[in-house]
Image (cartoon, rainbow, N blue to C red; front, side, top):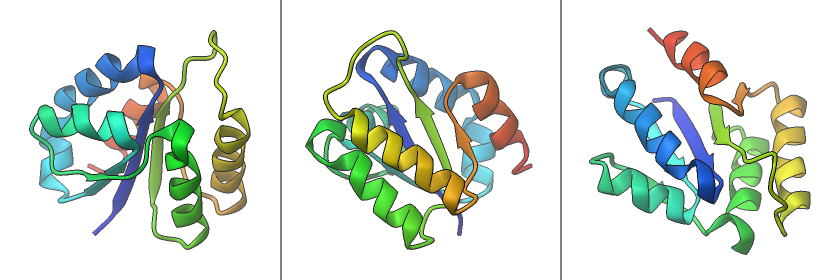
Length: 122
């Protein structure tokens, strides 16, 4: 079973839920495990998905996902970032993105790239 980590900054959470709903058939047919940072996970769960919720990003959720990447427990990351806003946990965000590169884990930071990654699962 493949594990997808999803993260969305506050202004991007509705876009993440919309993305998941648009790709519901693929996500369900592939029996993917979804893990998410706190609030993103709650919104995903409310949309009808089974999700393992970690801490909120600023409280360490990004670091938890980064650790799972290093442990080779994550196969793909979808992280809808808000590049126009400052985030107090920027070091954790950059660490997560760096670990995706180090461990060759596909990372999408916007819906267009995420669509390509999800379609690659078909």
